[in-house]
Image (cartoon, rainbow, N blue to C red):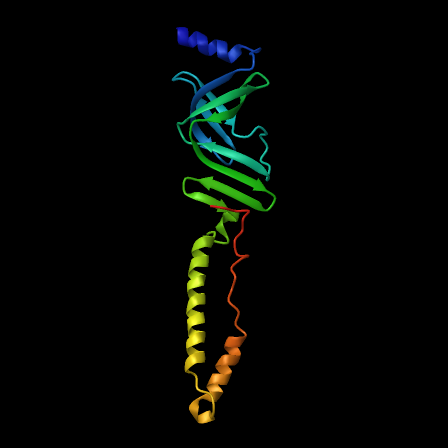
Length: 185
């Protein structure tokens, strides 16, 4: 009987002071940007907002709680039927969209703009690998210059001249401008 009285009081009470309560998130709907919050086995707050504004704006910041995780919710304008999630014990995902830029964060990692450009290059590894190729080219140039005979066409001077011309235009790369410092991982 006491549980029924608590439920009735919660449903008909109009003037509730701003309250913050904790419950478990369930029925999470990312498209509607809502979830239900189970306070106990008797009371469920339906369609709690995951965003303060309920319209489906293109630009948004959306935090989605994990199913059955604890969430903190607050009533909006003291209405039992209008609540927003304001705290999370566990997060399933975060999505940020600003115009054409999108960032999704999940347990699997960070995805920028739906992964259209694949993974971000690990700059230090790229530089290390490119420096190896630079060393190979440098050794090749030194070896070719040392062993290419000069003189008559028969002894390979045409090949030597051609290779020296190509190699003399070669400059060692600096790799100084390949790292994007605005995105780090």
